[in-house]
Image (cartoon, rainbow, N blue to C red):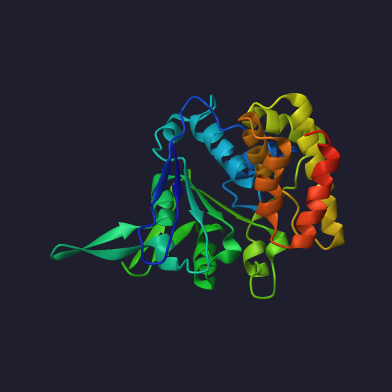
Length: 295
């Protein structure tokens, strides 16, 4: 089971659950040495930073690795007994340290403590994945520092407690370098506490394989979508900040596999999804027409 914890200031942090069968790993196609790097870092319990553009596969990679480590053939009996291998937090500008650690709640005439996702992971020995960490408030990033060095502790000030992390606990964070600015950037004091694994969009050949695996689309059409993705990303050198993600190419393929024409599928899942700029939309539409001239 993989839990996705969606946090919102003042609301329950464990809001969404995603069931994953214990015998089938989430699909992931390695692009380099990221799997071996992650495994080596986990063996030494080194915190991991994943950096790369939107929709390039960072979250899927973490889910895949969590399954491999906690449900795979080489998983220890102790890790197999961890109920929730990964707790994912979608960071946002209102995410506070309290959302991660926990809070006191009123229940009838009494006050009870509710663990946040980070505390839950520290106790269980799960992987805690903080997605888009730069979006969180500064007190949230400072909070994790004590979990990223030899101490591996989590202070819970409201309870006057200090938790030592379970032996199997691992902290993983991610961010998109393209979204960084003066107000939202990962400080060196935080960055230098992590082993970094860098991601980018896959090659056309591998992206074709990914599209086929995720959508069931026939190879000729999948190859054309991968080619389209590559050409759209070249627009990044001409004023278009974000290229089209692999995720959107998969969405497009899924629409096509359900009978939507390639032109209409690209319009809905790519042109209108990636930008509101009419000029950029027009440029993308022209590229779509060149790749799918007879669609």
